[in-house]
Amino acid sequence: MLVPRQQYSRELKMATMREIDSGKTMAEVALGTHPQAKGDAELIGQLERKIGQLTMENDFLKKALRRFREHPQPIVANGNSGSTSKSAKPRKRRQP
Image 1 (tube, rainbow, N blue to C red):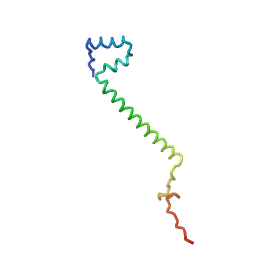
Image 2: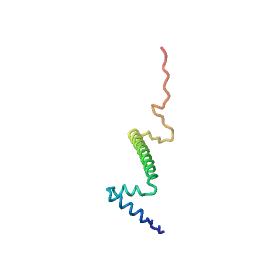
Image 3: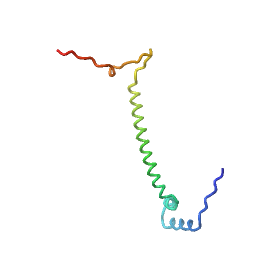
Image 4: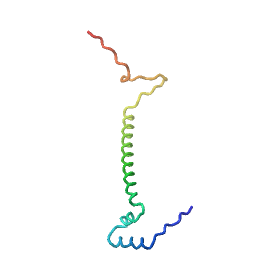
């Protein structure tokens, strides 16, 4: 499927060349002349926040996985549910 090429007006091309001649970088000119440049800045902010959120989630899951690997749960071989000392009911102490 072919996508038709974008056609730019002569005025836009001349304005772009003037900006480059004035000392702006190609990236500054490209973002400044893009019709959705203002919306792009908002989108970039949203994407940066999402990257931060996903990074935090990854870090959390890596720590949880490391903890499970360091302290594996006991394997139940006979089908009975095993009980660990932490989950056993505490014994009642006798009062003297």
